[in-house]
Image (cartoon, rainbow, N blue to C red; front, side, top):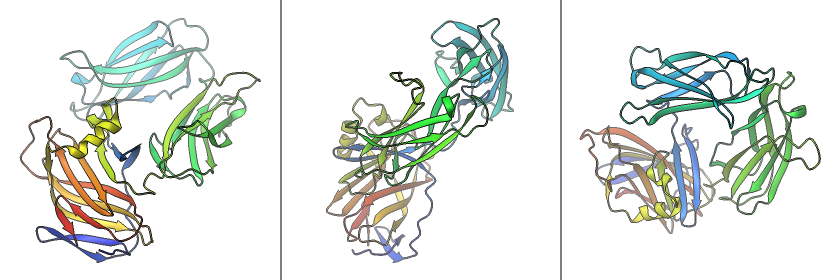
Length: 393
């Protein structure tokens, strides 16, 4: 069926969707996505955007900052057994200097509350780098259930030198035209940051530039930003290296950070796409691509009930096609939620389902589930779509 305009599809009857034209604009996608390109197709990974039910966060002091030998550490947390928080301070690569405990102050275990602890490191040498580990343990087996950490410069006037790339995020899809690199850095010589973009497979430098750390303080911390331009085909994996340039000839790079991204992974067509969540066990496999490929032969699935599908296609000879699927499934089910897409000559067969390879108990009710996926950029606007056996007309 020819689709040259943005198409909105609504469920009509029990087995088909009917299409009608709408405006060209697509709604904002609030999800955080990362990608993995395999020789058989693409893995799309949905990153969580909400705070987990069980967590610990350190809010003060700032990472890499300078503190006295006595200072207060504080943060937030939720879902911890009896609100217990353990704080451990050690010299980097050395002995434990301090261990203490505190509790989250909250009305209930599930509620988010605050915690703090005064730390006294005693007599430590001036400018001693320390590593702080904050965690909570399970009362059943002593395993760590929540964790956060930071590095500080203890008994010091200036913070530790560091570089931290904030954007692009790990595994994100990015453009090669005017790729923006943003980050934070501190205690950098003359506030200069070098940035290189490299082809991950070959190591070839695709682009390089410099940025300035925005701070008025000597050895201060601040943001940096730069745009780089280069040529790379869609699906190319790249690494972005940001570092303090060596001060003297022959000196090694002492302070750096690296991020990985993929050039516009959806700017092309794939024969198969697998959409999974960040906590999916596939991501823990030694060979992620091989395990994900086998998922297309998996018959142990429980398809969701599909209630509505909306398809957005840009007006173009080669449209980028996105779908929003309104489905229903168990409100409490620990089995992985996956969507697999098989493309045969621009005919797309889509399954949205729960993996039942490892049977677990799920509630019998039906709760709404929204799944947003992309079919990629198609070679032409003549395509067909089927979702869980229901054809789009």
